[in-house]
Image (tube, helix red, strand yellow):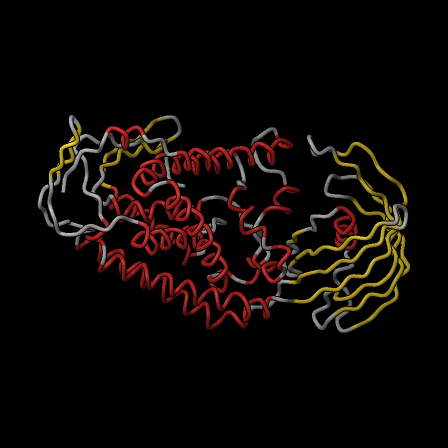
Length: 452
């Protein structure tokens, strides 16, 4: 089928794409202002990032959405927004703004499902590692683009230092190669990128495009609208093609198998502690509570987002009191001097009772902490002052929730990822010819600077 778009379709602006780019950019400017717009500050990452182990707390579910609009650094958001613009605007013109937006957020949610569901392949540490970025949602756009425009010619440019290396290929070859890299790198546990989040978004794009697209029927017509005309010719849609379909099916089956395996081993995850902190600020007479997470094997941590719980957590962490004698309960009455992460010497007076589990990890503390509190500039992330001898009454409890999280959250999401992949496999193999959009001879291919 070949066709010419009507003049109002040619001029229709992809407002949803523009709005999503604007929202992502605004969030990045706010969250990176402390670091001269080069990277998002750690404080914002702690508040906005998605942390799988915190999914068990309903008050933390906002992170599913906030993480989709948060980016690590200037390169992260630049390439994400470039891909969103180049692929999103055409996809939105094809689907319409509402369906395009649904696809975007459904893919972002699927990215969370896959990222969490495949944690058993990466180890329990990833239960507390924060994840940010719109890559999962944008990957869904790429998956849908593959199904709609498999033969669209694209001009691709990679930069080797300052020298551009450009070539032309068809969309199915480029997108299939990109998807294969995500699957392979994911299974190889390559680097620190959330590859299975990319996989989840891409798979969701394929799985949902059949319901969102305008499916064709076997008919031909030519309608005259004055000086506007739509031409349609009788032609059997080509779809993905046998080779593309075969490779895509193999990759989807590999993903589906990984989801089933992850679901089976997820209940055996261990070593990700979640900390519940209740704090009474004696000087201000205010109460607050929050959660944190850490892994005692590596020392990685996610600090609380609220001020007083964060102060208490950091003092216990810096003083080394999260580790102690296994299976013991000890009475503390100590004064110590530690260095903060900014290099400032801090005095801490701790009195109370601490209990440790069989692995020597703090699971309960009840007592008082008197400490210096640093004043941090929100703009420059530097220490601008110190409040001396601020007193807190503290009740803290922690538990290794990797096992419970694996059984109650990770395993169901692993099975869900396999179901989504199964749907995508069926759509890709059996429904591709019904949703493919045949190419216009006058399309100008976009330029791509590199992969997301």
